[in-house]
Length: 251
Image (cartoon, rainbow, N blue to C red):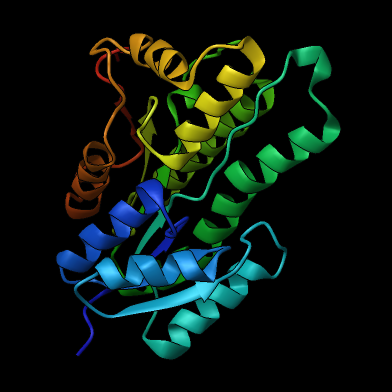
């Protein structure tokens, strides 16, 4: 028999892949969601239990319903949702286009909201469930040149907090993990942009990001995964923004 069902968006690489592999190792049947099917199959090969690869762009209006319907048809309603799909973009405020704004809000805010909205009824009906959104330290502070990204992450943290308050008596927890710079392909893209815009080498650009964190290194995927798992397994944690950045943003 399959284990309890988890759904992970952004499961094709980076944090999402790490979360999917960990949930599989903990006995979950894991639905893997991202835009790129080949990456999902790579993630599935690393998992030890049942997986279901569903290649969808979660910013599409109908995609979230299609994903959840496929999972429910194949297994049963989702008990754990981890929303890892996300992206970053940077520009001076005056140069932040409507297109950049819309892209950041669609992927980092609207898509997780739709996933939470779709997952909650099944969780409430069962009397248990866990939602974890991988946000960012940008959800809790403002940095220059990332207005659209920061607004989207602040927004999704608001959704998390409101949902946690609403579901507190229903057996469903909702939390956000707020990493600093993590050693992932997304950060690698940021390093490429810094190098391109400043003329520095990639090594110098990476060291600059490392120095922005108190422990002078990038956060590892495993460190973020461990924070996600602590929220999944502990029903006493809800409504929290758990920072994983080596101590830069202290609560």
